[in-house]
Length: 214
Image 1: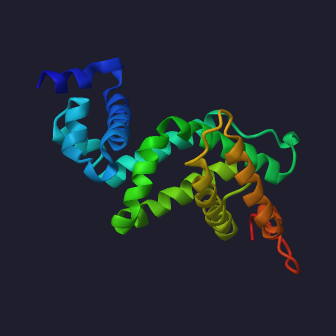
Image 2: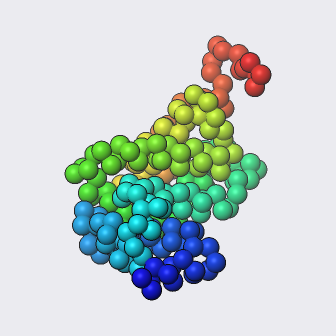
């Protein structure tokens, strides 16, 4: 009970503090025990709170993973929108995506464990798909590329496919500056560039671009 009381007073922001510590605990346990062995009771014990208190913030393991994804999104967005003078849409997207891989780097062991467990829990991965699309949509916005409307949904889905492909290299990238990941991302973006140029501009051949009021 004393631990639970302490968690409500740390830093003057009990909700934010517990949310962060719970995600930290989940990632730490995933790295040490394997994601398949992580339980909500174990996460609550690791951060020193009662199950009820954890439930109010994260009612499921999927919710914990979504919370982790939002934290990474916040780190990607912390740098603001990539300067449009930095180059083409692809160049800006490259920079925004590399922010993501740098932010994920400290959690590589935990993420590897989660990825390894994914085939045994396809429903959980399906539930996380909307979060992945949101993450990619915000990455597009960080690159100065609109994620609005049906076209924005296509961009986010396409970027999600790029992200999944690049993660295969990121998992094994032991370089200090993530140079192997950068090379894989550059190749992946070049592969989709023929259609990405159209999607990023939002203009389709033979069709008049609609005004926001139409």
